[in-house]
Length: 191
Image 1: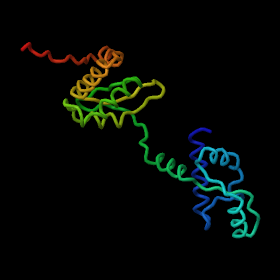
Image 2 (image 1 turned 180 degrees about the vertical axis):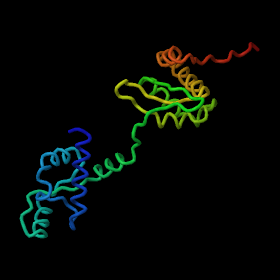
Image 3 (image 1 turned 90 degrees about the horizontal axis):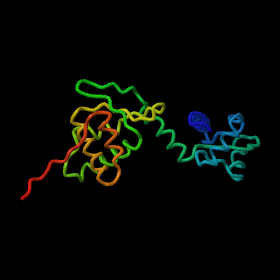
Image 4 (image 1 turned 30 degrees about the vertical axis):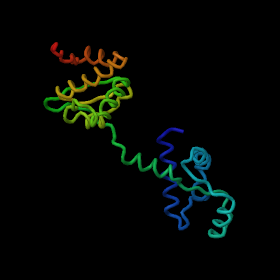
């Protein structure tokens, strides 16, 4: 089932259960969604009423209730996550910023680098962690888009250099070719 259809069904069930005094969406209100509801129950997003609960609901309604559903804990969490998830917005570089597009492997390396920020002795450029968190994925191009300052790009190049030194040079090489930014470690003078 498509994600938008999944969310639509869960939202419809949630509305039905909120309208009911007993907090269950009933067959009479949700019949067109029966198959979809069953699929979502199989995925743990909805909870179906067992025989005993259906008997109680039948007594409450004064008619036989053949099936009933309500949103499960995971379904509630999915709705919440969907509501607060930021919508992709066009990435427009501000003054002093440049549009940077990263491949998924580069974004993975960047996220690892940012996750170590409080342990690294070389601090991240100011704002790089926030830019990483709010990066927009362009599914059509298969790239992550960020607006970065020169300092943030240099910091990112340092992270790619660390990644390169642990065995994968592709991320640093692509970044250097595309943006002309490559980290060169300072040579230590001989003692």
